[in-house]
Length: 206
Image 1 (spheres, rainbow, N blue to C red):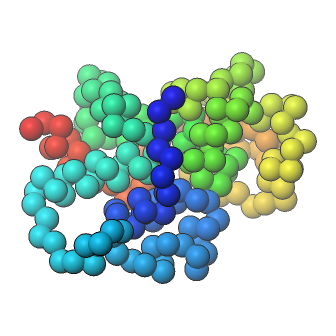
Image 2: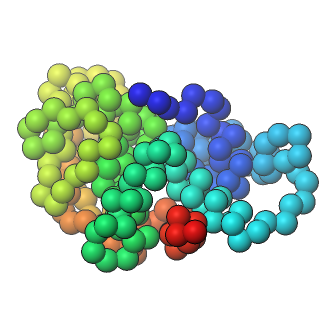
């Protein structure tokens, strides 16, 4: 499986916004964007005039990096979103939000999307009682996501029971049982990821 293996803090600095790729570190003074709020590289602090194409490209790159997708996977997701009824940009965001790894993150069962992806890959979750280890698996309304019994004794999940978890309105979580339910598909208003999806649609429409 292809994946990004470079320093993830560079991605936040390149996009000029926190992508929350390193969990708790992103909320601390150690965050790379807090310490060096400019693009990485030799010319990172130089002034640059951005074209319309540049703005569209940056928005697409930002969305990819928020959700941890590579180029081909993101493009394929966009093509599927374009075939569905409704507004393509909103369809795209809803499809990204309802990926299993993102849903696990939204439920507070992982500290970052990257960690959620790893936990799903390692088979720590079941969906409706069936083991699913595919991060891109698209959840549906009514799906119940549960930490496997064998995994619940690990320190990672034990500490969750003592935490206050805030979740978006389209999911619910029972921390004691370490399980959550998809109540509905997220609406655009419920997706707080700072992405201007119309720029991505414009980019792919060229």
